[in-house]
Each structure stands twice: as structure tokens, then as C-alpha cells.
Image 1 (tube, helix red, strand yellow):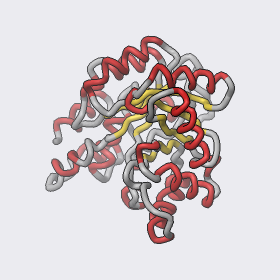
Image 2 (image 1 turned 60 degrees about the horizontal axis):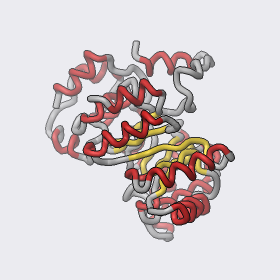
Image 3 (image 1 turned 45 degrees about the vertical axis):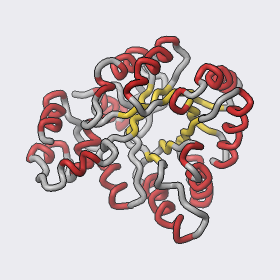
Length: 284
């Protein structure tokens, strides 16, 4: 059995995992990204599809929603909709600081709190920008109970050595990075290191920025998909990602309820073992 299957069985039985095994909270393995999708205006017509997606996300067990000041109006839209829907307290809010200088960082993070309508569960340093400065602030905020968890992110594999250096220094709860069948660089050392150090992993671009769908557009779903309860390529791609023993949550972005249902289904049912993971990769 995979580690994910064991944790799911323990959760169903009401058994908590040992704190030393994973110090961060147990989270549903499929989250929701907001890049581009939540960057909309204030009109009801623009926000209605996102309201439907966010409401359905919570109904299907979703918790982690990830945003950033870099994502235009996404934080504001997310905070408004979560409050209007009455689901703000059910979400694990993750966002980022993306600026230079202590004062500018504090100002930006306080603005994120206002836009998101409350405490941020996870504050991350976006693309390691002025990371030492912001991590100093965030460690103080964490000790004061202002944030629950702190993390670091980067979208480019060329920065993975830098991410690894911060993980080795300690004091990091989460790392966010790209990982998919199209971008597997993190498997080499960064994911094993995160697992070794007990650092939670958020995965963005689990569909390789859409490249995986283009690659499989005319390909039938492989027969073994039924063994995993998968009925779409999206589910297979996500199951590949979240079955990695270091991965905590994948955060695909979508503004379409049907796509969200497929994504969320990937977090349930059997997870691929090493042999099935190889089959999924070979099916491309």
C-alpha cells in the first residue's frame, strides 16, 4: 500500500498519524489554484462561475486554496466569495509575499489578510524574492500566532538548489514547486529532501501548464485506469502527482465545475503504486 492509502484508511478509522511522521495538518490532496482563473472583476456575471466552483470545491472536501499578490485581483475575489458563501472558515488559505524589503513585505502581507478576509494559514515567499528578509518576519508572525505555517516557492527548476538550501536550514513548513509528468525535475532530489525533512509539498502546474492534455488529446484512456477508479486523463495525471510519497496537495486551477469534479475525484479511490506510476508515464 502507498503512504497515501494508509493515511486515507487511518482517516476513515478516525486514527491520527504520528505527529513525527508529518507535522503539518492532514489536508485533502487536491486543492485549488487561483492564478488567472480568479483574476476577474466585480460583476456578478464574472464571479458567478467562480462562486459555483468554490462552493463545489468545499462540498467535495477541498480545503487548500492558493493565491498570491502576483495574481492580480485573485486574493480579493477569493476572499469576497469565500465570505459570501460562508465557507471562509472551512478553507486552508495559502498566499504569498512577493516584494522586496521588510516594510514592503509587511504591508503586502497585511493587505493579503484584508483581501482574504482574515488569517492566512500559510504564507509563502513567492519565487524566493528577498526570502531571508521575509522569512525573518514570518518566523516572528508564526511565533505570535499570526500565521500557522510558512513556506517558500519557485516555479523554475533552475532554482531548486536554492529551495533545497532553505529546506536544509530548517524552519520551513511548506515548499511549493512544479511537478507533473511533463516536469519531473523535482523527483531527483528536492522531493526526497522535503520528505526527509518533514516539509509539506504543494504542487502547482500538475498538468504541465496544459501540455499533458495536448499530448493525450486523441489518445484513449489506458485500460489500467479503471483499476484506479479514474475515468479521465486529468484524474490519472493528478493521481500520479499526489501518489508521490513527498507530495501533500496538488493545486490545479479551474473555473469550470465539470473540470473541478474530475480533479477532486483524483483524491479518492486507489492510488498508483510504483509499477502503476511507471505505466501512467509510459502511456503518454
